[in-house]
Image (cartoon, rainbow, N blue to C red; front, side, top):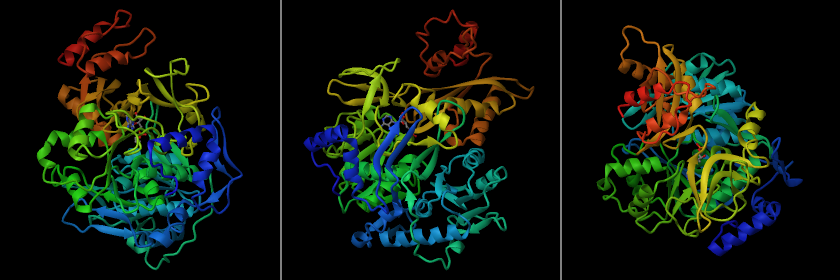
Length: 633
Ligand code: PRX
């Protein structure tokens, strides 16, 4: 754990080194890994195309760095602790040696079924150890995994499978979530009706649900691994070969496939994990994210395993059997570092302290937050009642596109300031800019958050559409990566993230594009036009509010139309995108050039119409009155 920073003074020193000579800095960390061939050049980049290479022309395998590099020392150490949905069911502990064998075995099984280096494999699975094994096996072969969160609908799954032309899908019969037994395989079956590229589906038996297996296409996981060797030579991959694609929503059109590559992602997730959480050799670390999001990729699987950590994976939900489940798990496994999302904190806070009180939480030494701004009230509740006032709280700001944590306290090192992501990690050069892209220097400034220099785990492209990558992230401001977030640097130089400045809504830490939800709503044949905005939501951070102009049939009531629209969204995207409120309207406020005035809709959705600004220039000012009335304000 050579790269671990131990004091604030050391952090400042390392930060300075990383800025003065980034190549030397990152080379020092990269030297902790094993490489089949070392790089010709640490960094080559230009942000215009964009074209970014880290550790150029080197050869490696990330799983060789998880297993072969560490096995001599931690062979019998627990790599994954798996806590099932039902607390009555047995916990599974998998050692590094066992995980290595299972990974090799499944790599062989995938290869026997036609998967080769460069092929795309979509993973649509619950939170079970096999999901991590699936990722690692892809990485071992050099196949590119693309995990789709198992809450997305068959339409959304099909879109992603088609976008990356996946050859194989890995899934399960079902998914236990609380009291529910959610079908998974049937969603895959529906999706595959519209996907021609997939030739094989491997199905893990988890719930024992009766499912339909298609001859020649569908195979059981336990059967494909039978008789497979538990040795598999890791493929020698180029530093810039793709490791994975992860789809995420933006302000326009369909979700895009964010691409991460092997070497840079490996170096950065390892380094950030070690330093932000201050992981110690014997610690038990738990991140509650789902493996279908970037947090699960970087901080359940790759970062912790590269650091030789014991990482806990939880199958269930925070409220089953009751709202004390997280805390019960912390005590049961003596968790040291606990990393979750503000939406979970707020939800558990609402259940009350009686669900926390039965647990000691003594093992905790670090608590963390990710996914959305954490409001001060939730920050204090978390800090005081879960961290017992003694655990540093790391409010970690980052994105699917950044691959790893960018701005965050280092636990116990950077002084905590509620609701502030605080300071950048070494190697990260954030800047605040005004609308013209002029850098705002000094403290006490507020602007759009950009990063002006590459870091090893920056996205390289958006799959199949490099132009979109350039337009979304590198064209708003020249020579900088634009995050889409607004931020403030306070009088101490600490950064506070203010939230998205584009048309992205952050619902319970999940990104939804307004255009994406509108497109889904418009699939309902009764909808003529729609507009979607976000509004502050006590638990979810933001909720989705949809306005829709509809053509009513005689049997429709406003209520049935609203419900129908919600159902349409659920089936096109999935339950996470369901609007909290649907308001049927006669028109939408538009400028004379026909642009929807979302500002007004946001005010209505937030139930604050005291100051709507000048609406006289609207094409149809009368409609505003109707909308306000319709909203019951
Ligand atoms: O708006 C920021 C918010 O989540 C967005 C990234 O979402 P996603 O790619 O899904 O990744 C989430 C997990 C890394 C950001 O643009 N966000 C993330 N972390 C924070 C945050 N906002 C405020 N504070 C955070 N700690």
